[in-house]
Length: 518
Image 1 (tube, rainbow, N blue to C red):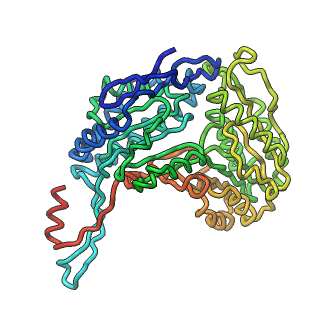
Image 2: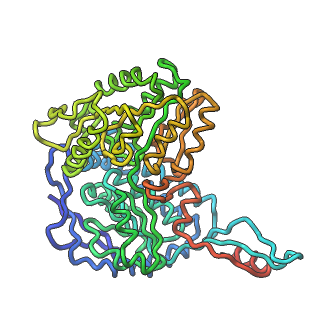
Image 3: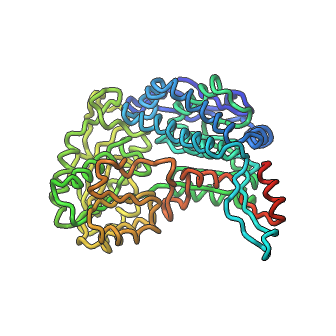
C-alpha cells in the first residue's frame, strides 16, 4: 500500500493522517492512500500565483505550446505503464484505458497545435476594430489577457488522465498555472503521470501542482483572479458555487455535471438499414464503454413506438454477448465500477428506476463475472430498461445511474414528442439524432438550447462519426441546466475561461503598436 504524495511548491510533499484509500476495483484491495493533513494549501496557491503565473505569462503561445508538447511526449513514452495502471486502479479494459490515456494526449496535442498557430504573442487580440470617431483615429479594441490567479481543477474519478489533461491544456496555453486534484479513489494514474512529468518534462516551477487526497481547506484560499473548474455531481458543483469564499471573491467557476444524455432514432430508419446498425452499435458502446461511467454516456434511448420491439431485441441480443469481468483479460468488454460506493449508488438508483420502468435485457442480480472470484470486486452488469409512459417516468429524467444502464423510451414518431422527452432531462451534455429525414432533423434543431452538443447522424456519415461519447478538443464540452452550465475545450474558446477580456480605447496607431509588442 503506497502513500501518494502531492506536488506543491515544486516539490513532493506527503500529507499526514490516515488518508483516503485508492482501490483495485477488480479485487477490492487497497493499493494506495492519499492524505492531505498538514499541507499548506494556501501557500501552495500563493506559490503558483507568484512563481508559476509570472513565468507562464512571460512565455509566448509558442513557448507554452512547447511545454505542453513535452508533457504529451512524456505521456506517450510511458503509455503502456499508464494503461496498466488504468486497469489496476480504474478497472478499465485495455480498450477503455486507451480511450482515457490516448484521449489525454489527443486533447493536449490540439492545444500544442493551437499554440503554434497563435505564434509569438502572449495575449489574445480580438480581430474587430470598433471606430469611435468619424475619421477612424479613435478606436476600440478587445484583448484577452491571462488571469493572474490559479486554475484549480477538481476532477472526476472516471477519467484520471483525460479529465486532467483536457483542462490542463487550455489553462497552460492561456498562461495560467494549474493546481489539479484528481478524485482520490482513482488518483494512482494522475499521480504517476505527474511523477513522469516532474522527472522528464522540464516543468516550469509553480506552473503545475498536484493535490492527492481530500481538498481540505483549499477553497478557503481562492482569490478573485482564480478559476475553479469542476467535473462531477450537480450537488457537489452547487456546493462549490455557494462556498463562502467563492462568493466573497467572485471567483469564476466552471461546472460540468451529471447528464442524462439521449439518443433519438428517427421514424424513417428501418431495421436492417446502415443507420439502424450504427444506432445499435453506438448505443451498445455508450452503455458499456468504461462500464457506463462516462458523463457523455447515453442514458435515454428515444425510439418510435412501432420500432420499439425490434430495437429492444437488437440491443438485448448484443448486450447478451458482452463479457463482463476481469478487465485484464482480453475477452472482457466491461470491467468493474470504480468503487464499492459507486456500486451501492447504482443499486439504489436502479431500484428507483424500476418503479417506472422494467428490465428487458440483462440480469441486475447477476453475481458471477468472468475471471473474478465470487464476491470480489465492484461489478455491475449491463441492464436495459423500458418505460411504457416516458412522460410519467420522472425518475428516468432526473436520476442518473452512473453505470452500464440505459432506458428505452417510446415516442409517436413526431419530432416534437421526441424533443419533449429530451427536455425532461433539464439540460444535457450531448444528444444524438439518427435520421435521413431532413425535415425531422431540422425540427430536432429546436432542442439546441437544451444540449451542449448535438450530433446528427445521417446515412452519408454513419460510418464516419465517432459516436456521441467522443469529446473532441476543437468543439466545446459542457451543457446547460442540469449538465452544469459550463463550457470547456472548443479550440480557442477553451482559453477564454482562463482569460479576462478588456476593452481598450485609444489612438488607432498607438493601439496597433502596443498590441504588436505584446
